[in-house]
Image (cartoon, rainbow, N blue to C red):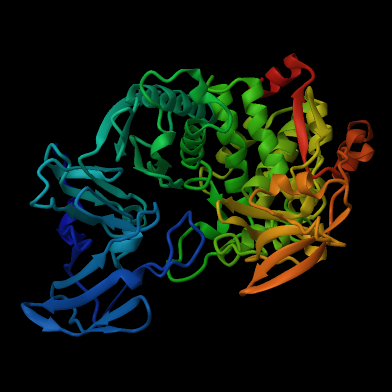
Length: 623
């Protein structure tokens, strides 16, 4: 198709990317700078917005060369990701380099004989001083793959019917924020509130039910557009979903008018599959939740975004304490949208919410780190998890979603407004742009007539448990303490297989920690404290067999292998009693909003059930 070429195209930074060697996973990138600065500087970003970790994309860049006026000039590397080009002013400069694309995640770049994918941050150097100029991208087709197509959110200038050709972006930020998918993928289109959407899927099996995926995705998009713009259209002219299907993987990354997704092959809907596909915990429901989550980010982080990310610094970490809002509130809405779109019923939705609540309750780090601190530490903790992570940190996704839940239910209990209204008012107040925590507080005060500072401070900057049980009870949901699984009772997270039990995490304050177990141990079996020839012990391959073999004993010796040494560790077995939700939490509704912020749930595991169907439906319907 053809589009009018912008007037400034002659002065644009021109990029050409070619899949030059599919088997070697190499892209060739050529950059033409029409009027370089003297000693022009270029750099490749070290991170990609939306994924808060320095990933050092320059490790994949090789063979940088530069020429000007037909003559080679020096390209001198200044640091890990920056080059200074020995250029003269006013003479067009051409750079050339290769990118090894061997990362199948949504964050970087991939290339082989079946598929190509890249984010601009991992393949296109930033021309310093020209970031706000028009950027033109020419995507070349691999000669050996005539069936390949292109999908991207970039605006086309002149392309072939398969999508290869020229595109433009208004700035480097836009170029970096529009990933490109190429290959012989499955593709379909639909319209949501007058806006064209495209969904491309690479790697699906023959059983894939594309019609169902499109129908369900359309419901999600229409529901979210109505939430943000009850009487208007979304702030984009088109949208592209790019789904890479693998044997067993999961992930997503949001962009301004597209998203890159990964799911397992078994997670796709299959032809002839019944309603069971839309059950809580099913792979397909998880995929729909991912689609909902990333699409919601189109508003909540790509436009409404932390003030610290008003403009991106691609050279280093960009810190903010607001990920609890942008990731956490999005996580609250992702499954709620599925319920409102008719893709889940009340019971199935509550199962998903139940899982989130238990994930938070079973994380000792929630009493060590606030969710605001977790947001700030994302660069060094969330994306670099280790055996101590659950003891020292809390997820700004899961606890942030419960902060949103508490806020929504608190607003609904007062009867003055809902979180839906707050999100729309906040988007309007911030003009769909950068926001501060104070903006949220201002909107809450405007809509309700009183301050929410104490609540937000307690929930976001404090380390006490949230008043989830009390607020759910006020909206027709019963929250009861339940008996945790044996792993949780012991304070363990393990892997199980034919070879035995591998200790992955030892949770703070549990019997396993008191016994001296540590991550990396191989738990081989148990022995009685007083072993005899008739009762020498048992081999363990499943943790659920522990109480079977221990009988009525209150203590056993855990036989553990560590660094080729065999250890016998005295392990106190948990009593088989179910914990209960604390009375303080259960009665918090009677004490009012301020008291509720100070209550805690004593149980490590809870079970949700519907006590008042009408109240639950009123909340979940968004009424």
